[in-house]
Length: 165
Image (cartoon, rainbow, N blue to C red):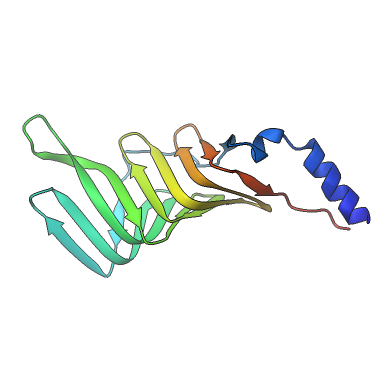
């Protein structure tokens, strides 16, 4: 009974926004630097010269500084300059079950779109964000790596770590 009352008190004192359709979330992304190199490893690599995409398939791991992302498949879309030549990585599109990890937070989703240029990650499909003992789920999580913030959308639910009773 004491544990029930504790959980009820925590839930009643918790902002109602977390059970609404969307909520803002603080994330610890450290000193995100979009200029850091992006390292990708996978079982296979294929390059499509026509579209200018590199497709990494099987046990893909992407690392950029303290940010890590793993997935079944990652397509790298290159930025192009005015002359049409490639000008670095614009974004990474991950699918096949995605895990996105920063120094202190972890998120899982079905797909992710990581904009290197914009410093944002959009995770979609059964998103689960874990921060310490707190778990937040929804359908879409947009993370601003530079600001260290995020927004969860789509029937947001949370579980808050309980007390010692």
